[in-house]
Amino acid sequence: MNKLPKHVAIIMDGNGRWARLQGKNRVKGHQQGARSVREVVEEATKKKIEFLTLYAFSTDNWSRPKDEVSLLMKLLVSSLKKEFNRLITNDIRLKAIGDLNGLPNGVKEELIYVIEKTKENKGMVLTLALNYGGKEELTRAMKDIAIKVKNSIISPENVDQSTIIEHLYTQNLPAVDLLIRTSGEERISNFLLWHIAYAELYFTKTLWPDFKKEDLQKALVDYTKRERRFGKTSEQLTS
Ligand code: FPP
Image (tube, rainbow, N blue to C red; front, top):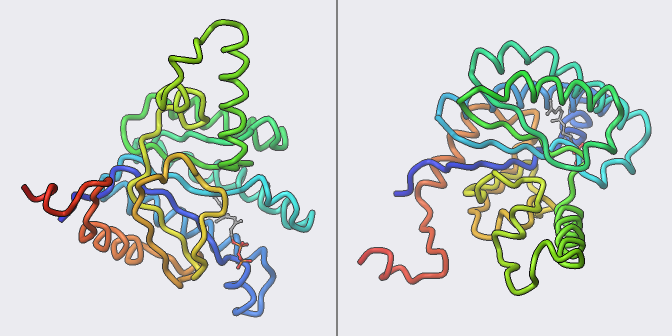
């Protein structure tokens, strides 16, 4: 049996479908999705998960209808305000990954405020991926490294995996142990491409607004039963 994962990442999918099934506007799906975020964060804290990373808004989500994008941004700000006290009492440190400069000013300011106020917290690190794309993250890292090589700050012979890691948005985040995706889709959708190299993947048909603490518990139990070989053989692991 594995120990519980250190780093859990979640692709929260199915808000729109949940709303449609209820005969409601997509907005309701996202609002209900925000409630699942609260419950899952609380449960992850109780389970002593050290890192939880949530895919909240991808670089491709800008192509959604303008009203939906604007609602999602408003929901983010209101959730950050509403959950602030809970983050403090649960000792959670908030972080964000992605091109934050591309976010509306109000969102960026609120985010930076909460990140700053929670930075000394010692409990779970909760990372929101916002305006995030895995390919964009890798491209940006390669460009930064190329510039440093050009300016003789780094010598090309010394470029290794740790050089790349240092240039990712995620710098101090460990590799993902368990990646969960809700709603029945079985795709990675440009999320944390570098960090999921050896992640265990868990797909569930449950739509994100219906994903509650029991669903997280189920995913964690499933994870503990997986054999993580990291390229080795089963026999090597047991010997
Ligand atoms: C995917 O469902 C969900 C999103 C693109 C946004 C995730 C946002 C939230 C859960 C709300 C608040 C977040 C935080 C961090 C407070 P979808 O709209 O793609 O669903 P569909 O595939 O069924 O249309």
